Image (cartoon, rainbow, N blue to C red; front, side):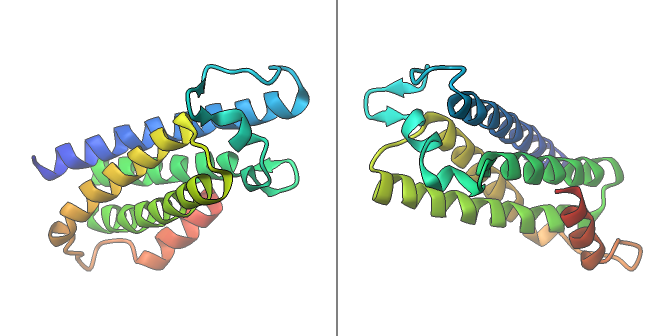
Length: 166
């Protein structure tokens, strides 16, 4: 698979991850406001998204769901991937790789909390985890192709832009 195809697939999966996070944020507020009741499509067998969304681990701050931060982070990552695709910027692809490993690390931490602490699973969370894993794998497989030139944007500027974007 060519670098362009890998970056395109990574961008598409990042978009899916951001969309899942947006839906999870909507789901979080619907549950917390009582608008949706306590029964949703993702309560199947041993999976219980409601238990996850109503747990204390679903919030970063009171009334600020983790999924909202994930949506913002992944949207910023998507923008950087699209910039990398459009301009063939190696530094954009390099920074998107760094972002994807941060996303994957967060996914693994929260997967551990789901399994170890909450003792249930969330279909939406697992879909997001799968997207983060595949994107990190795709971008990591391209690591030898990330040779930056003197014309590339320095990594610190990507970091600042990413922080502001999120």
